Image (cartoon, rainbow, N blue to C red):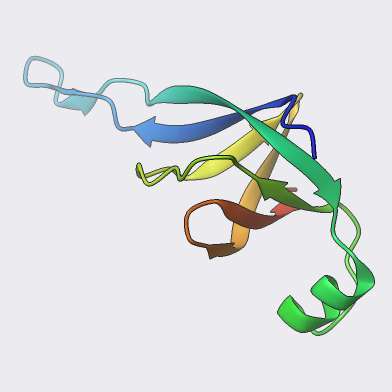
Length: 97
């Protein structure tokens, strides 16, 4: 099994409050790069997790646990939400529309 696909764990940090204007600054996305084995989710996995077949779902496997907080995962230009995780090493993610 090759762990050669770069995946980015994204965390959104809210902008800081500016007391002069009374507004918050723009949100900032912080990414952490990891290498993973990324495969399309099998029919069995999809029916077990979702109860239906879904396109654009992937299984992301890491060699070591990633237990830092994150909001979503980016692979290439697309972002994915995590629908299931096990041991902070295996994630089943579906594409965010």
